[in-house]
Amino acid sequence: MFTGIVEELGTVEHVEDQGDAVRLTIGASLVLTDAHPGDSIAVNGCCLTVVEHDDRQWTADVMQETLDKTSLRGVRPGDPVNLERAVTADKRLGGHIVQGHVDGVGTIVSRTPSEHWEVVEVSLPAGLDRYLVDKGSVTVDGVSLTVVEAGRDRFTVSLIPETLARTTLGRKQAGDSVNLEVDVLAKHVERLLESRLQKEQQHDA
Image 1 (cartoon, rainbow, N blue to C red):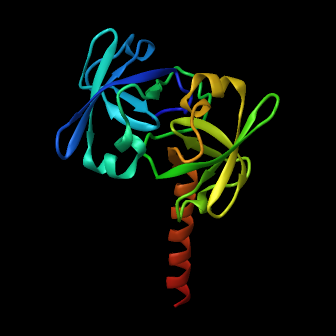
Image 2: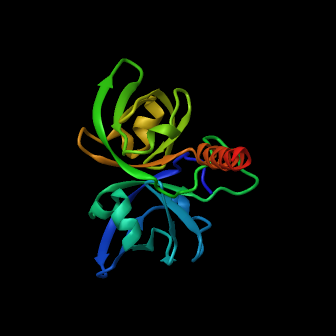
């Protein structure tokens, strides 16, 4: 589990095509201070497993399923990536509960800068709009953000200077892809309500 608070910007060092998978080598420092093989690190919001590492880089295997459903399919050497280690029980939950399981890939539609923040509009894949509400939580490329306005096929978020400076969202341009993860609590509530409705319908029948 993660919180959506990016710890550092890493850099893709190498992309090894393995046919039905890709092995990524990512340069980093902070997230490697206590890393061990088998640990989880979120890369642009995707939970990946540390295969091996030294004090300046680590590798992870990305399966075809992940490549098909996330923006990691398009990463190239030199690309910056948001990194976050899995949360431990003694840490503050600064963002919200994030699983590192991408629900869909959106696209940056527009950016509107102001003096102290920037409003970013992101396209929303079909079927995900029901999980977003104004002032609710969403994860964009691994960054926990508050939804400003939720629409049927897009939503907006406001990025403060800290987010712009410390994550890839400060560099993304219109047309760039971003990984999206909706609030898992909303999905659980939906499932519970569906189950209750089915039981009521069976009772009425």
